[in-house]
Length: 355
Ligand SMILES: NC(=O)c1ccc[n+]([C@@H]2O[C@H](COP(=O)([O-])OP(=O)(O)OC[C@H]3O[C@@H](n4cnc5c(N)ncnc54)[C@H](O)[C@@H]3O)[C@@H](O)[C@H]2O)c1
Image (cartoon, rainbow, N blue to C red; front, side):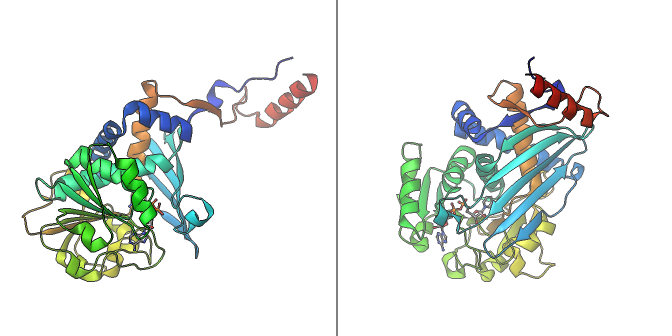
């Protein structure tokens, strides 16, 4: 006798790391970054519709594990993500993630996916989207400080979305810079490996800091930053983990994702709790002009917010609807009689015995 097959409501679309890599290759990474940025922008523009809470973080001496939930009333999404700067020593990623999108009406998940690659894409798309409104007009050169897992995604998003044509790379680990330079070769960017942060920011109108350290670090000091630049600071995203000297912050106009979370986790944890900041949705919704003049230093103090992951999940769900590869995972119990969960196990046991 054949074993009972999973019921129709037990199956949830699942995107593995392999399936995600195929999707990236099929879509083309720049096209994917542009499309993702559109979803992220659309959701920021309807900011009021979302449940918002600072993410729930479990800290340890080695890193942090976080849950990032949000809902727009129709769909619910969350991401599980970690940040462990010393993980590379054991061959692991600093950041790894997976996430779920659910239907609010039934509470049933409609998508389970890897989000390590998707986080790199959504972080880069968000950074470039913010820079489109904050960076000096016509910016062509970006300094990319920290050449780890996120860095190539950042460079390509700034090319595709902001029109950057040159990246100046620096990392304390020259092997990381070599890796990023190799990966970016032939991708339509002039790539300039540098041997110091000072050298990397020469002539750059945009400075991205994307380093990983569990302590207060000073990747940029005040004297390194002239007027008229845009700083995209994404590595400082935990209590006690920052990248910029405080004096840079007081000279900058600061833009954040969700101030209640960024005041705990971002560069602005170094400032008073009432220091003025602008939430980026206000710029995207046309309520704030973003960059006002050529001399201004703008800072996007990015920590990553749940709506960006929600947008990424929504984008991926739509892609699956138009045929992108995935598997169906037997994730939810689906007894013939919804009240007879126990009996489902008994019947399965009998079927196994008879098989
Ligand atoms: N804001 C967001 O939404 C968001 C999303 C993803 C990751 N992050 C953060 O971005 C950072 C980078 O992530 P990743 O996955 O690329 O990490 P990674 O460990 O792969 O790379 C970090 C790189 O920074 C370099 N580095 C460390 N200290 C440095 C210094 N003083 N100067 C120059 N380079 C230095 C390291 O050598 C390494 O190559 C992490 O802190 C992570 O938590 C933020």
